[in-house]
Length: 249
Ligand code: GTP
Image 1: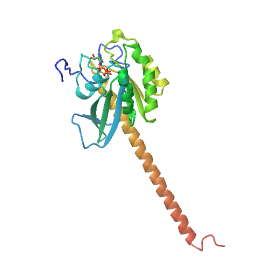
Image 2: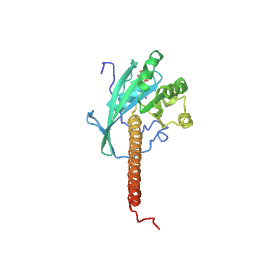
Image 3: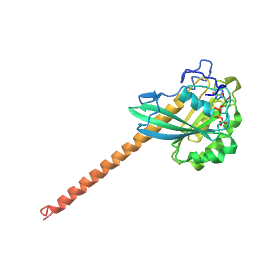
Image 4: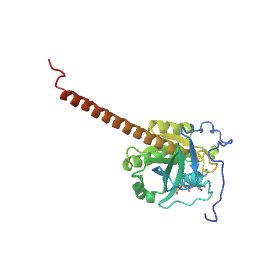
């Protein structure tokens, strides 16, 4: 950490009593039993790639740093290219590793970051609730994403900097409506400064990807069972056809 960085240990995931929207910002509970792991596990069960995108200065790095390292930096150091983080969580006994690529928002690097979209299981699109232009640009980020990412990639929309309520330019409802209209997978507001919802974003990401994985495994099992049933059926038919007395007048 550089000298001008200020370290802060916020109450991660707790509601901010000064935030009038804290009721609206409550997140549905995680349906699996979970534990956030402080160690970076090499021996994980599942791993997913996530990308964090959005305009420069909306708080992508602060948000990720807050969720992963429990710190907040007041000074602004623009990301060059990307920064890599990991978020490890145990869900229903399985160790899930989220590989997070925090990208830079500057236009100069935009063509570079589209390479990161590929193979991403989930994208976190961030705007700042006190900056209308960053919300309007979400349209462009979503277009970029849909063009370059895997079509099955999940998408979250995050309105950051809710601690700056007095400067708010985008209402919670506007964020929610945009998310619904564009069939995004989750909308949430957050503050990297107070810690509101920072870890919840990544917990919800892990939950959704774990859900998807479980669904896929169950479907695979069902298909295998169906195949086995079909095999058994054809075996019965073959055995029946061997029996020359059956079906004979
Ligand atoms: P790029 O790296 O240029 O893409 O920017 P970024 O989106 O990663 O923004 P970054 O996290 O570097 O934050 C930019 C500025 O916003 C910094 O000065 C942060 O201190 C400030 N900031 C980030 N999140 C919050 C927040 O939730 N509340 C407040 N009040 N300030 C924030």
